[in-house]
Length: 487
Ligand code: LFR
Image 1: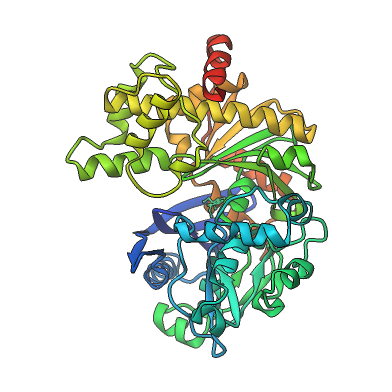
Image 2: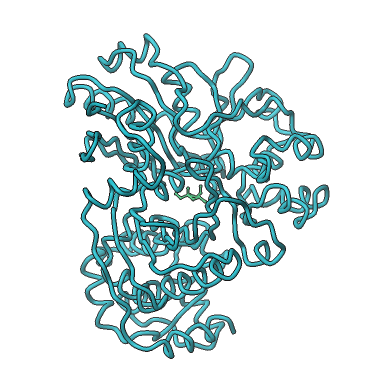
């Protein structure tokens, strides 16, 4: 086994980055080589992703990675889930992928549920009902000229891999977020496709994390100066890579993958397809090495990101570290909201929506920016508390520790409050769990590492800096706050 130079492409809802990784026995170093903004664009009433802009950013990053490392041994791509690019019969992209925060997707929910009732859908796909799951997106597009011309739907990382290699595949962890994968057989749910009158060949053949997708095409080699580098399938759903990047010991852990969304749950060997899990909003997404990510989508740092955007547009202070420092001085539980309220999903004035929810629940709305930030952080910790407890109850998996990975691991106030709310130690970090999980899966596929997730996680523990937060304070305040939100 030798050391490898890898590029981990990790696309988030607000920025994309290309990281260079050096991986080998006892070594795991990550350097950010290129970061570029990911700005959604609204045209004619529809919110889109600028996927060509993202691809250009990826090419820039790969060029830099090749230069820096003097060649690359592998490339892996992960991104947010559910959204697809449609290809026509010639393999050309039919317009920009629609953003999951576009309101149109949910118009198809009643039509889908009329054909396949929600409880039956869950028994097949095991997915938390989110109005933007691919199944609803595709159903909403039926009848459009674009959909009539479509021959294939590729998830975003698969679309980028197609442009890099010419090969069209569907990586299975991300496929598990579409609502069209059978959670038990882990194959496309052809029965569902037929009943929903979605063509079976719209979806590409499944590949597993670790499979080689293809090699860079001559065109891409000319653009980047790279050689015939393999593009390796990783957990192409960013959350799958992030969970692979959780530095856990054993299996008694919960995780909060904390970025724009907070994905809160446990790792299992088998799906849990119970009605109780469905009504509690738990999803069975697939992870690396055949694991199940039994988790719930909590609204996440989006509430802070969108608040900052609103304030910046109004000329108000919008520096997160400063606002968090001020929020830490605000008394706890001045106001708390259910962060999963669907009204927080679309882009817009989140502080105003928070104020409205507070008024509706008989609380005094936050009176300052600091109070709004404190309300969001308290409310997120409260949601983590509720969700960790539900994950344990519904799955029967006990947990001793909560791993908090992703950008939120930098937020000390949130980490401490999470430890307090969950009454368990929180191990925070790594911030770049998704890119690390991405690089580790590539490294193993290319022969630089051996073993399973346990060995990858051991390497993470010995190479990455983690911060521990011990639970403090009493549980009573949290229990009371929980009752306020439930009301
Ligand atoms: C996180 C994430 C979530 C998914 C959401 C939408 O980045 O991938 O797991 O539910 O984005 O795709």
